[in-house]
Length: 218
Image (cartoon, rainbow, N blue to C red; front, side, top):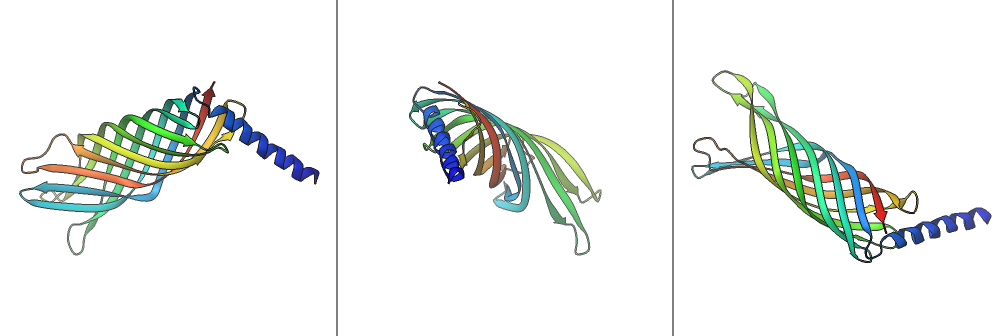
């Protein structure tokens, strides 16, 4: 009975701490990481001369982000999400009936955009956001004349959106550890196009798991 009462006291105390930090006027600062590994697909589209070619592959990603924000009302925080991400993908390219080579691409990006997050009193939260930015990438291409793989570098504009859910585990009155699970998509549009190509876009979309530390100033 004593153990049950102690556990109940801990749960109630944590909920009361969380509720107090989600009040209107609280300043919010979060820093964290996200990881997407074999959870999503990467789709590339090349269009030109009235022809569109699409390829699809799996991808992995890793990101760091910081999110300053402000509680406009109890439970509701809005702010700016600043992301630094890297994505990589690979797929098999069939050169002939007897030969297949693996091609890959790697992308580094910086994204900045607004986010909104809503906390329930117990610490559960829901979040959505968008991001705009730029990316640089290294892409593998197969040279049929030279019969080998060559790498090219390019730059692109980037647009992303995310939705997710998480939970705030308070370590003390002002600091919380926040695991999360979300879905995100980022689309890249190449800045420089080869002759005869009207558009080159790549979209990475899938699940991401994250962990962050949030500080609440009130």
